[in-house]
Image 1 (cartoon, one colour):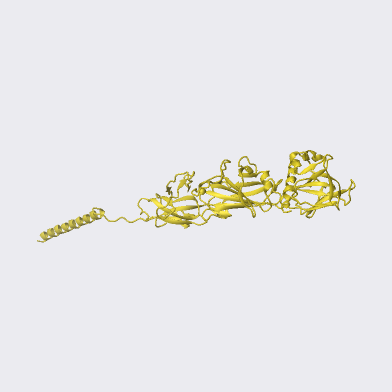
Image 2: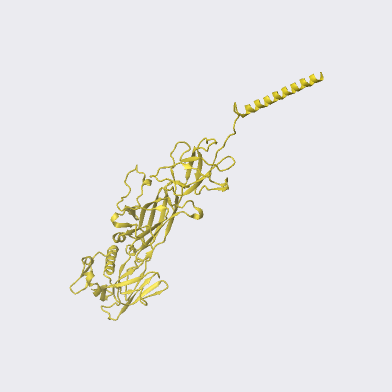
Length: 506
């Protein structure tokens, strides 16, 4: 019965007496154990039970008038044979999957042809709930189809005159994960550069009654999702840099326990990423055929990508980042848990000062991934004309120009970086080499007191200046000559004065 408990629907017999015939006024009931108050339960009477013998197990069924056309279809004839007198006999295999397939066929017919249920929990008084048990009473005996908006199979049982079944209202759950590119590990968060392709996956844990599965995903403004229905899975090329490919939903896998994993064909789902009215960025709609294949404990894994864009939230203050949230709808209005993962990116303040921490202008920088040589970490200027950000693969980098002694650069993954001064302020000594800084789950922010660098962990670059050295023919020489001439002149005046005094005395 394991397969049966994994399906949305079932067929159920309800009989009443252990004699060959029963009175027309004999009524029965269907009791469902383990009901959910926010779930709708409905029953459909497919066959009328005319008589049966409990001891011999002989049953006599005729098609219910409402379902005559259904049992005349070729699809229904694959399961039932109706003789000239209108009596129905099950002629297909009696395994769980075959019975369940017929149940789903019958329910689909009811929905398509607007066949009203015999009774519904939506109607007052037809389904009485006592704690966790619900009961349909005053039923004509027959062969009933049981439906639930949860898409969960209640069970299959035959009792006389009452039937009791256990609801299997298992709600499918999802788990969303994002890949950290530096370790290739999957988890609840990651760090990335602006322009980087971020890889996501959602695992759907299948529960009984897989029906109308739709995966919903909401991507933050700092992430860009694009999907082209013509895109195919990644080529089987070991030299391909998969991190640089942006394909949206690029693969869906079906995991069957003890059997294996296979890729779900494109025809089994549709990706919708426009004209959505539930705040989703995109949805994955699985076909009925695919849902019918799913069994309890199966898993469905949806792989897709998004790019961290220029609108990304920078830093993780108050645990804020670039969120990505997914959930599953199923059955007729059922909803799974929501699961959110977060992508973080960080920024730095480059601060340029003299040896007294006074801000100075005139410097230009580039960033590299190595202390010497290596690759440039390209940046471009943002629309505000002040801030710089990591460049995308299709953008050309520009130098980082310091204005007012400081500049902001955003969009960095965790890692070690190296800042090189390519233009030194006039009058200051050029730096001997690149200056290293490390980003580790936090911004490198600086604070200021007027034009003085105060505190913080910004990338602080200090330029020093020397004093003017004496020069030949400069003001020093002129000064010595002038003083010497003045001393000589004074000596001459003194000599003449003494000589005149001597003559007077003489």
